Amino acid sequence: MSKINKWLLLSIVIMVMIFWFSHDTSSSSLEKSSFFQPLFEWLFHEHTQFVVRKLAHFSIYAALGFCLFRAILPFGVRLSSCFWLTWIFCFLYSCSDEIHQLFIAGRAGQFADVLLDSTGAGIGILVSLIFIKKWG
Image (cartoon, rainbow, N blue to C red; front, side):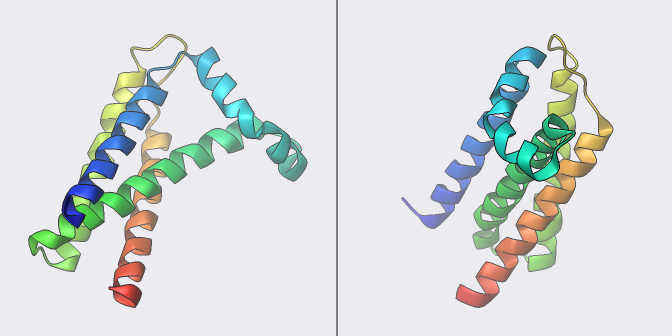
């Protein structure tokens, strides 16, 4: 399997995970967030669930941005165009994810999450760029 296919496959797996996590009801989502709760209670003392959930948003979209950028780049697209294509796709996927949550019991789509997701994607893309420049 070529590198393109591996990065694309990984991007699709991440998008499926995002959809799967978003399809959880609010109580099920809280249960998954509580996995890291002891660590974050120790670090932050308050607002633990909020921190865990926002870090999850940021992290998974950073991973998506990283992988999707790597999947698109071999098609000969300029770096700047590849950055924007990847970022716009991640932004639109985040929008669709938040709209999806409007139809799930106890969940709410929030534009603040779209902004957080898009920021995570941008950081993931930049990290991918650094990897490419440093190690090829």
